[in-house]
Image 1 (cartoon, helix red, strand yellow):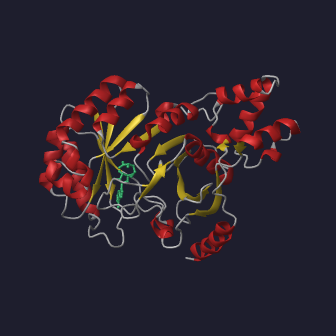
Image 2 (image 1 turned 180 degrees about the vertical axis):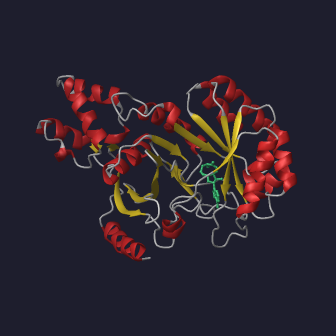
Image 3 (image 1 turned 45 degrees about the vertical axis):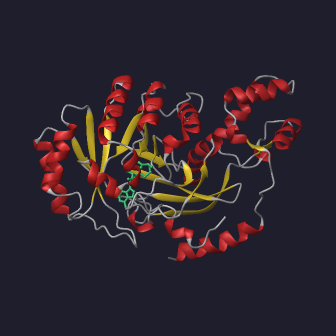
Length: 367
Ligand code: SAH
């Protein structure tokens, strides 16, 4: 609680200095080719572009930090670009498992959250893809806070670079599982994935990047056409159309068979196993017949089911399935030869878990 009180103070401070009239682009929106274009247009040697890129990778937030770059270039940069993609408002660390949660303020005053999780040697950053979310899942803490806007590619990569800088942790994995529906922001998501995997940059292999979607077939096909060897996770949460509509209003617009067809096409295009996320809610979707129906629906598909012990959210009527239920559900799937596992619960003391991001803060932040 102490951390949150502190955050409140920070926020008031920031609000007073907020820039909303600045129409320069973000420096982090520039990729390597853009930087080269900028350097060439200024008549400077090409190696300057590599230097600018290296500074971006280090997570600079002020052009004056670029010690080996001449002042003329730094001034030209600041005439056209904003150095920082966002500023850090708070960074909390879980006392249990070292999960870290950052609250960032974007340049237009909106706020987003980014989480770093640790499992053994792995360091995984979970990024938000939008400010708010429009999908309306009935069990999710982001629902009700409204959708504001998509994040730009610079704001996506900025979360990863600043989290790496602030936490001083080398990163191995990235998941796009924070707030928002990433497939409604494909025009930033695809370049973001390319930038993450750039060998001269973060060099995170696409096999270590996971994008989670509530399952929008048209967008999934568009993603399939990009043929990126990333992991795609589909939030399924129900074995049939009726229950899915109850949990996820977006399902009213997406027939389950059409969704599974899109999944099959994605599997064929990328050759990669798809993950189905299934949060278990007590007596809602965790009964034996749900497990059996789910196994029947997924039979023969190259997939993996990730069972998530649900996170209980204040004001949400669903309760978490008891541990023995989760175990039984898993066993029923495995008995029917469905590859499945139960997701570890991390960061529970700092509300860094699925669906909990942003909510706590909303009572004090209205950008
Ligand atoms: N819009 C994307 C990604 C954001 S949510 C999607 O729907 O996949 C990330 C994951 O957290 C999704 O699987 C979502 O369904 C899950 N989630 C949201 N609220 C949850 C809760 N209370 N308990 C468990 N999982 C939750």
